[in-house]
Amino acid sequence: MRQLSGLDAAFLAMETRTVFGHVGSVCVVDPSTAPEPFTLERFTQVVESRLHLVPPLRRRLVDVPLGLDQPYWIEDPDFDIEFHVRELALPSPGSDRQLAEQAARLHARPLDRSRPLWEVYLIFGLRGGWVAIYSKIHHAAIDGVSGNDVLAALLDLSPEGRKLPDPPPRRTERQPGAVELLARSAVSLTGQPVRAARLAVGLLRSAPALATSQARPRLPLVDRLLGRDGEAILSQPGLRAPQTPFKR
Image (cartoon, rainbow, N blue to C red; front, side):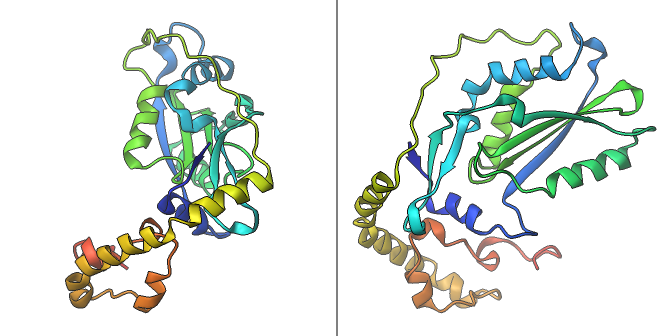
């Protein structure tokens, strides 16, 4: 069991009915050179055989009662690969526009927080017999660099694939009870003064940028100091990013 960082927890807290914290990608592959039929069953086997290469894919959230502390990740004791790997087909003619619209619809659905925060879809029916792979995973589980690692773990550069070492024995982890989570939170909260000190140092270092930034934080300084920890305070766009038409 491991606790989410402040920033990872912020990606969960930011979600609304119209704003999601997951990231997605679309890959288009040509199955004509596959050594065996490219089916949902075969693809599911490949993904399942490589889950040990990406440990976050087996972890799910456990919330602390009353929201007194940041959530924890645990190994999902009821993990079901068939919930996460799915298939669908585009209607004829299977154009790029249809694929884009389908990916947009899939991306607009929130992830189920009672399960590991990821899904993969095989999308058949593309022109030329090609197949699309749409995947989405929550930003609380991975960052941008880790997202590339996920694709590298699941995909191969040649039709023959690559030989992988045998996966280690799967760990089983029970879900902690409310009392245990509250006890962990009590211990964690004792470190708040240290976190506040780190945040104060960070604010002092950024004071010149705060004074000259055109996008100053709307919250007063005291509100920033009362944040849970330094990682939970998201940087304001004017502090680092250059001026571009997209900065709004």
